[in-house]
Amino acid sequence: MITSIFLFLITLSAGAQVPAEEFPAGTGTITDLSVNAFSHPLSGTRAELRREFVVGNSFFNTVWVTSPASTTARDGLGPIFNAVACSACHFRDGRGRGLPDNGGRTDMSLLFRLRQKTSTGSLIPHPAYGGQFQPVAIEGVQREGTTSVTYEKIEISYNDGILAEITKPIYEFLNLSYGLLSDTIASPRVAPQMVGLGLLENVSEKDILAQADPFDMDGDGISGRPNMVHSEKTGTVRMGRFGWKAGKASLLEQNAAAFNGDMGITSYLFPQEECTSVQTDCIREMTTEDIDRERLHTVTTYTQLLAVPVRRDFQKPEVIRGNVVFKTIGCASCHTPSFTTMNEGLEPLRNQTIYPYTDMLLHDMGPDLADDTEILANEDEATTHEWRTPPLWALGLTKTVNNHTRYLHDGRARNLTEAILWHGGEGLRARDNFRALSESERSDLIEFLNSL
Image (cartoon, rainbow, N blue to C red; front, side, top):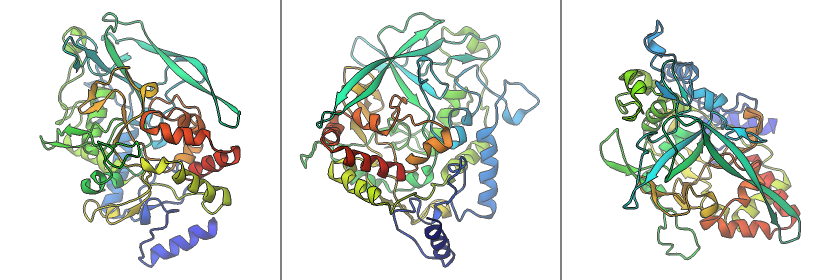
């Protein structure tokens, strides 16, 4: 492995492009495999761009405080919020835990989007709690409540008779300040890892749409489609790429929305606080443009430049066999292995062959992973049953960086095997194929996933 990395660095110094899959971010791939593996800029980030990365990193990790404060560059927190810093949920730029192992209060890295059903069958933000549940508030403002979870154990049998267990989370909203959440869909979302986001943003829309098959014309049971969303940045309808339901078209908008919804920090893109008309104490403490354009754009540059670590153990026989299994049972139908980025944007993002293992499209994942039993529009065009295919790169370093192995949109899967067994809808065929594998083939597949 050390030799492979050494040769790779020599090749980079010669100015060559390296398309090999063991370097998932192309020439931007970094080699640190420590607890800080997700927190480096792309290799080749230099001079002013590197300085901007460092400044953006400081804002990403800083603890925001209530306004007004002597620290005017970092005030504006609340009035209601989920966390006090970006890194509180994206610890070391990684994946949030979301759920406690033994039940109880949910982790701050797990938020809940709220939509209330109307008499016409449409969905709107909750009139009292708004579009996102806020369990924390500044002094003098009433928080909305708390959330906890218990688990139902579900036993699944492989075709060879070996048994597996998955756990279904059952959420409860407690200490509610503004009445019960009746006729309300609560959509849990855990903080995803941050690596490689700028590279995903720099994949052409044409290449992503080429993967779409909304009417399943090829009959393979996969009907990925884009989420067409309103862009606050351009005022037009664009293809969504970011968030668990591809609800934001750009990283700038994703970051601005997270500042607003998660920390109550307003900006020129999202100038309104989350306070609803019944939250009078919240309204009293509202502020405007808590983060200015320059700082918001600097944080965005930071998130665009976060690098992807080099793959591990890619030459092991079991990993090579697992790659074959991955493709054979149908995983690659949604987790598209590679793209090539456009020749535009920041220099380290241009013309890179990358291996993110995502098509960035929405897929119906079936009722077991759905926000609601009905199929309703939940976020722009995304329904309660649909989720964007998450990228798989750096998957195997989650334990190293974040000290857990919880996956899926709310962290319900305690490991990669459980994540596969939760697949339904368009992922049902791949899941059933996984259950039909031999024990050694299943082990090879997990080895491959952990090598990414």
